[in-house]
Length: 101
Image (tube, rainbow, N blue to C red; front, side, top):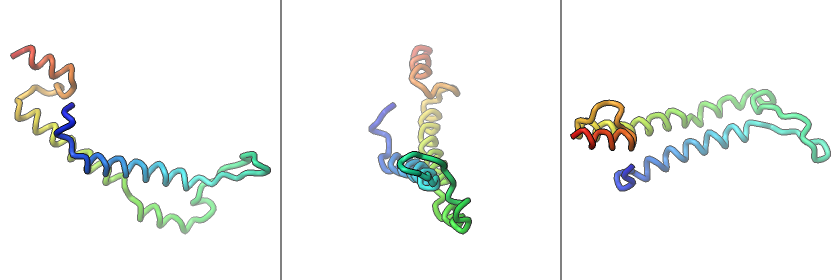
């Protein structure tokens, strides 16, 4: 992988989206402790159903998918420019492709 061709902004968007998803699921879990011992865990939406609107405000999975597709599109363009056959996106495929010239 050529790291010079990567766009750090797109990588940061994907990483941020994943962090928001993980933190959102972590915050939505409501652990209950009794004298320092975990006795139960509930979900935020069970305790406060009106919090469901938050799930609509913090939609980052579509952002992750869109950005990932944009990044993949660059790789497809490179493959088409090289006229490489399908399935040669990885390092092994590149070695095989260069060996057949």
